[in-house]
Image (cartoon, rainbow, N blue to C red):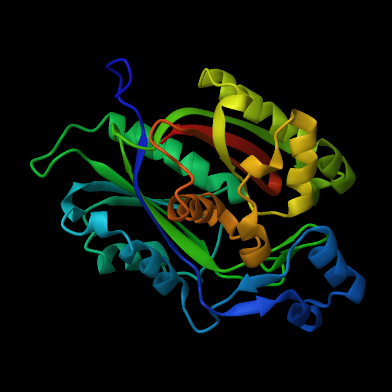
Length: 318
């Protein structure tokens, strides 16, 4: 709690990445990419390989991430909400419902489960915010304070789901995050976002304009998130980026004065863009490397593009 007010917090985070590593050169033929495009991805954007699990169905992908949450075992009855944040509006043919299949498998059939879309790869941040607001209105139960489970994870099941032209390549993977209304660690201090419908490429928006305004728009929401958290850029211990490519973050760092040694970029090369799961993939790496100490503040940033664009940033205190 902060000044007697409940604060959304990340109680536990688990990530599943398939062990199969696919060099981007092998994507050239199936994705109809030229040698120049592959060279652009590898040399210019720093993208060398992606993770794939072609024989693993989506429910199993999500369940493997959730099974890594040791904090969930024995606390299933405390989970009131399950939020599935995903980049694509549709990921399975009707009437299949991967989310409900996963909830039943995890013993969470009692929880209110729903999907959050329309913010593409920025959806995970929105899901954390929504989960915190829902929990803040929930009374404690006989088993303890309520929890929410935020899931992310998608299959690269179409050509559009495997790469963004001239920008990034996608990995398959999943994450699971337990959210509470007043945890003592990884507390959410601020959330800022901007939804820009004018960047709807399908509706005729200019891709060149989106690329031109991408970094200034992300810089603006980062600045608002920092101000709302009463934090300076220099106070951040770490920035957990979306893993779109290295060049974007080099140019953004130059724009806002952010040293790249405080941006966790190692996963860009080894996994590429894991849809909505990037924040949690990078969080896990930060914890494994002991990069965050109690009291450290860190920023998470994401951009989602599709029917318009969403720019989002959150500041947490570890």
